[in-house]
Length: 415
Image (cartoon, rainbow, N blue to C red; front, side, top):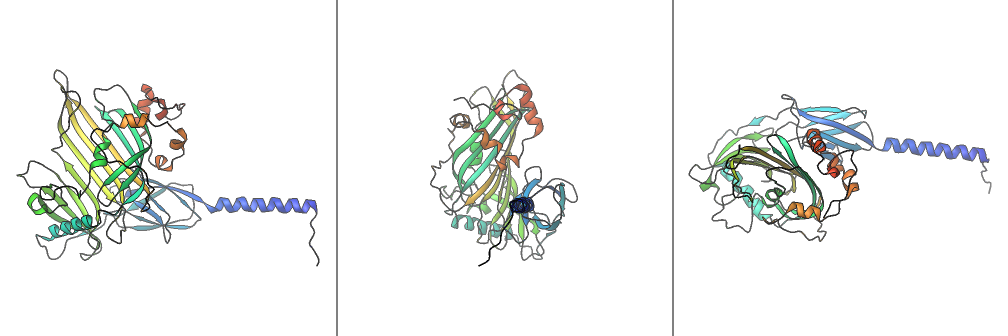
């Protein structure tokens, strides 16, 4: 049988061509897109909007600044952009490199033609029963937590941790620390255990006595709350997401008010926001007291839970209060934190998850873990949610914990 023969020079030329073609293919195989999503009318950024490549499972969400980064296989690409309370839209992207500025129009809010006073109570009761029925369904993954403490508008603490986390459709069930880091300066108070509120709070707790529960999602909703159906986000009143305002009845000592969004078809809680003006807290210094305290809690769940349940996607905790001490001027305290859940599945990795305790000490747990600079430098979740430049700059000027500051040599955390 005849064979083909190549001269050495021809073979080298063919090899070079194949390498160049391979590099060209690799260059076209992945394209990184960057952009920001805003409200079309107010131009305000939209945190945690969903961006997905149409017809695929490839997608991401925007960070707190409305920014996103998404790698696509090829261009052009059709992006489906959506966010609760806004009309979803598709964007055709033909070229990478430029920052995409995407705007979404506010969704129309439709009130049902027939208003029944008991209707919002029925919706909340259905959502409560849905949570109770699916409470044992567990999700396993990771969560990135960032907390910034400010005293009189000056940043005094910056804490970041990554937890291995077990959650259900109502709350976090347990965590184990994967990595953590902390920066702080000398201050009258430290709130490095603030994460306990995130790890202990939930919409519903099956272990709690339902007859005395003050939670919105309980059998006592009519006794404890006033509800108002603000509208239905969607095309008509037969589908979409109901927006319900709630507040505790004035005769209760516990005071709270907020908004909950419930999917009408699946009875899933999509988002929940509550403000607790009656929040109480204490410090280890008996001379110090918190006054005018207000805690704002927000929870968001991954959209599209066809079975009526979905894992947590976001939790936010914001505390504002005044710290008073005899003989001293009050100090304005502001603590902001968010937790972003990712890499979630129903497969149990058999890790030692522990429930949060009021005796937990975040800083002790962080210091007990060897500091891994590569973990933080190459972690895409940390990169997609950059800390505010003014916060980093403030710590840099004060020389607080060089491992938290850009451009400085990272050192292992001291035990």
